[in-house]
Image (cartoon, rainbow, N blue to C red; front, top):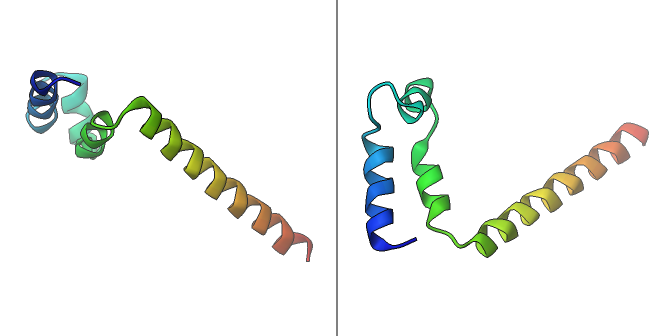
Amino acid sequence: MTPKQRKLAYELITNPPPGSKLAAAKEWGVDLTLLYENLLRTPTERAQSFASIVRSFNALRAEEKKTALG
C-alpha cells in the first residue's frame, strides 16, 4: 500500500462517510482500526497470521475432543 493509499484508508476508517457501509459497521461496534492495521500488513503476513489462528483453533478443538472422550 502506498503512503497515499494508507492515508486515505486511515481517513475513511476514522471518519467514514455518513450512510456508508463503513459508517454502519462502526455504528454496529466493529473496530475498524483492526481492519486498517491488517491492511498495513503484506498478503504473506496476513496469510501467516491466518494459518497461525487456524493451527491454534485446531489444537483447541483436538484438546476439547480429548476432554470429552476422557
